[in-house]
Image 1 (tube, rainbow, N blue to C red):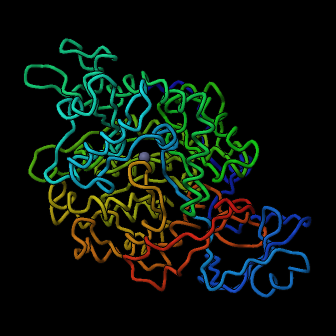
Image 2 (cartoon, rainbow, N blue to C red; image 1 turned 60 degrees about the vertical axis):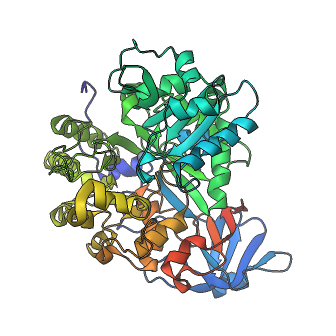
Image 3 (cartoon, rainbow, N blue to C red; image 1 turned 90 degrees about the vertical axis):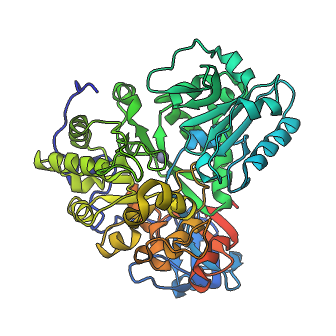
Length: 572
Ligand SMILES: [Zn+2]
């Protein structure tokens, strides 16, 4: 990494205010004046949870234009003759869910691909059969595209290779993306189109899986190995480039159907650099886009972002630049998350993607420029290096506490690391579906029964008073917030429904609901406009058929979404 850029020391609260960011979350929230014009929509006769500090409950809420006008009795008296009445009929109304970490370009680009992951196709043969059906349904000449394949969740674990994929199609290319996005599986036709043979050397930082005789077996490890192959598919490149606005609106449709009204993209610019910001903006021309976007600029495009002069807080309430994303290590289930001790049954401690000294320099540079950082850290050693880098920046006089820097995934946390995070006002952002879907793998193959108790410690960070959040990392795990709430409350395992993983880390439904609403709003510097139901805030809301507090924890994920509203408009 080269550090040759201008260094702005000290992200003061005044500087943050100048950037349009509200500064420290514990300060009072600036109120916007509601617009006085237009028809009032009155939601009444239901359970309305504004998500305030006391977790209060009211039965009515009035919306005018894009904003919330009043709650409770004041809402009832705000509506007059000719206004719209929405009878909730006992249903539960909450602030729209905020997804604090997902990958927009991957969801958009692969939106048309067939889901062959274990949640849809539990056995290996089912996945192959699903691809066969996809081949039959794909127009001649088009690539056959799959997504979500995840060998580690199959019993026994098994990779897709040319051996199976060539039986699906020998004359049309097949491309299947792993759930992590880091690996792909292709057939011989795709290898041929990409010119990958026995004699092709591995690309830097990636490799081609091979049979014993050196022939490529169709498994492509690392984006440097699979992206050049994927980009030979003209339909995919169109979805990623000229068709990105339309494909992105499909992601908005999906979010709205799940009650999600804000999406935080965690790799903005990773494919096409600053042009991606313009495409996100263009999605909001007209009224077709159904979810807000908060963009986190991917550090791999750092030079381009610096050239473009992109700043935190740039944009508006629909689409705003919210932070800067850095990936410091790999993934635990991929055995590349950096650990203090080796993985169970091995002497491997994983990888630093950014060496600790380089991370120190990077964190000092970007926090000094006022960037709220989202630092991917999976293993406990990676989290040590993040905390060291943050403490170093603070020691240099930078007000890092005001930046609410986040640790993404934050998978393995020791008590003393939680204390250090609290002292820095950092936000733990858990990929909570790791517990439900991958929990048995984490226990039996990754960490062992003792260390796995430190996985996704929602209960401990809640007790420590941290504003923690939960993410799906979609498409890594399925988009949807009720599943996250269910897992935080129940911590039950997909493969072993009777097992509770680290029961002390379970939280109340109320705490889990705060994590997917107001805490997530704070994490992306948007709590002055979304995340709770307060007069003056935007009318982003979800109506559920049942109150999550009234059903068994494991049933929370099955509650039907009745309606979703974003910016005062019904979008689902
Ligand atoms: Zn991610």
